[in-house]
Length: 184
Length: 161
Image 1 (cartoon, chains in turn yellow, purple):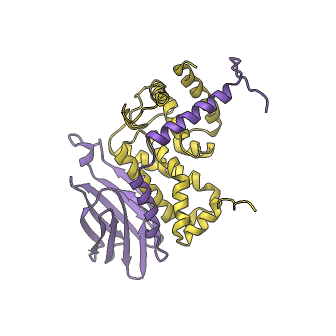
Image 2 (cartoon, helix red, strand yellow):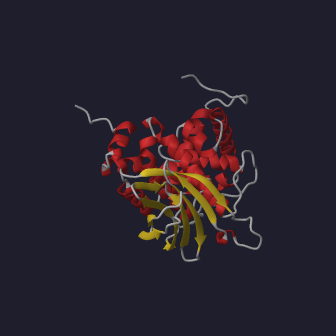
Image 3 (cartoon, chains in turn purple, orange):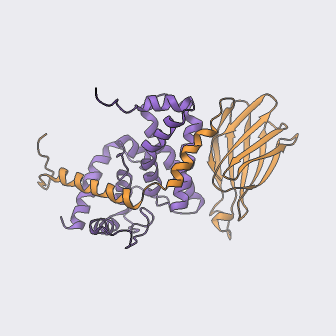
C-alpha cells in the first residue's frame, strides 16, 4: 500500500476551522511562498512584506467561515495579499504599480539586494542581473510566478489585477525577453 | 503534446521558458524564502480564532498620507470604519513615532469594553457612555479590536496599524 495522498485544501480548511494546529500549519506551508511572492511583487521591503504576510494569514483565520469553496483559498489569499500590499504602498505615499508601465526600477525589493557572498551560484547572479533589466510588468509577473508551488492563473490574476487571459501570453513574452537578456 | 511554435518559429521555446522559470524559482527559494519568524508568526495566528464574536469588516478607509501639505506620510492619521450587523467601530490611527495610538468610537454610541489585540499583547480600554475610547502604546503591525457592549461582542478584521 502506497503513502496516503496529502490532505486536500478542503480537509485542511475543515481542520483549521476546528482549530487544528497541524492543519493550519499545513495551510501556511502550502501557501506561504505564494503570499510572500505577492508582497515582494509589490516591491515591499522585508519589514513591510512580513507585515503583509502576517496580516494576510490573520485575516484568513478571521474570515475562514466565509470561504465556502476550499478551492478558492489560494485566490482569496492572493486578493488579500494584494489589497494589504496596496495599503502599505498608499500609506507610504509610494507609487502603485500600473498596468503597462515600463519604468524599470531594477530589482528593487522584488528580491533582497544582491549580496555577492550569498549569491555564490554564478547562475543565480546571471538570472538576478537579467531580471533587473526587464520591464517592471515582467518583473512583477515573474516574481509572483517564482513562488513554490507555482500559483494558478486565477491566483496570479488576483495578485496583480491582470485579466486571466493575458497571463499566459505575458508570461511567454517575459520569459522570452529574459532568455534574450541571458543570451540563450 | 506536440511542439509549440510562436510567430517567430521558436520551436521548443516553451520547454526553455519552463526551465528558466524553474531556475528563477530556485533563485527565489534560496535568496528570498519566507523568513522563519514570519512563518512562525503566521502559524501562531490560529490561536486568535474565537467563535463567540461577530466579525466587523472593514467598510471604510481614508488615509491622509501624502494629502496634508508639509507632513511626512508617516505622520498623517488613517481613518478606518469596521461594521458588524449590530455594532460598528470608527477608528483614527495615529503614528506616535514609537508605536500607534488609536482613538475610537463605537456606533451607535454606547458604553463598553474594548480589547486591542496587537504585537505587544492585548491592551484593554473602556468606551465611555458616548462610545469613545483611546488606546496608546499599540505596537505597529497587525491589530484587531474586540468590543463588548452589552450582549454584543464584535471583533474587527485584522488590519495593519
